Image (tube, rainbow, N blue to C red; front, side, top):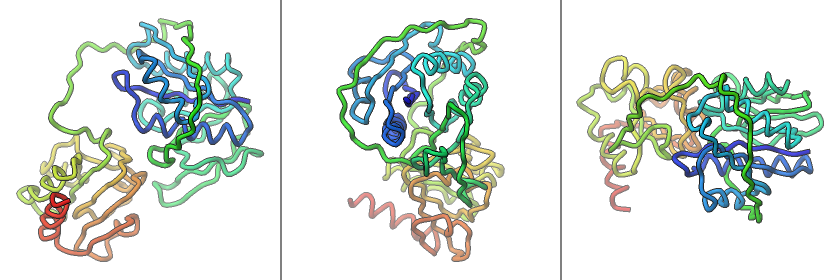
Length: 320
């Protein structure tokens, strides 16, 4: 029995999410008494690949194929399926992000494998194979039994802390056959945003809602975000009103994020909004309504006027 973890890279570098996946894979491999193989697709140098061994990888397969230079879910699913079959894999682990959500269903069809999407902890049991996941926009938890021979798990970001488990991992260059007819994605132009931290990459996010009362009141929130080195976000009503750009909208109909720290300022905590941020490791709520639903989801809460609280928080951060 073996576990295969697919790790993305960003311009040849791995992020915390990659190490979360490998650590989780090591945990699953230990539970089923199996081996752990990590698959990397793209141009990544050996020194960077070796870092995966620090989190439990025993074998690292590296694929650098020109036809896979651009992510295409059909082509990537075909390659991962080929590697999984070759390695006699019983459990495949992928990130529960946009690319993972695109690849996992295609992989499921190819391998006739059951999917546990958005799992947030190690399996509850391995016989029968039972995983834990959030349900109803994070308002409940479910135990899902996967009965297929091959299982696919997509791991929710920030749900599993990376654990250092040094291994002298073996790095192998893997050759795969790429069906060019599956590649439907063509990148004609790349425009990179500069001077602003991307929401999806941010460890800390400071977000504002209608409780900010006016777009003219955003300066204290931006000051706190700058002091923390955080990205800024907003609720849907704020972006709909044009107070903030639509790319900052988080929630069920906006960006789904999972930072280490999410500070919600003047956000009531509607179900649709919480669905997009409930995977945050820590949520801090600032609201003048002590009965706001956001406090039920938050680990820490401050009841009061955001216009008075934000400047003091920013000052405290700067003093540290």
